[in-house]
Length: 70
Image (cartoon, rainbow, N blue to C red):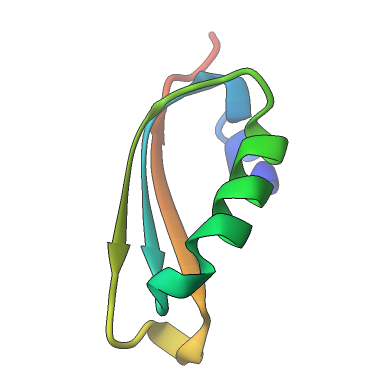
């Protein structure tokens, strides 16, 4: 995600909304810890949804909306 944000002239600090899709809600604490550590002090709006299956059978997928720098 870092590389995609950089390519769009953005960063983790410019994320305004994210959605976390997680295969097993029992993993929420681990995902939340990594997510919080990676985003640092940024606190964008966020939702987390448990899903039955993700592409390529990954355990977590994150989509985000971020502003871009000019």
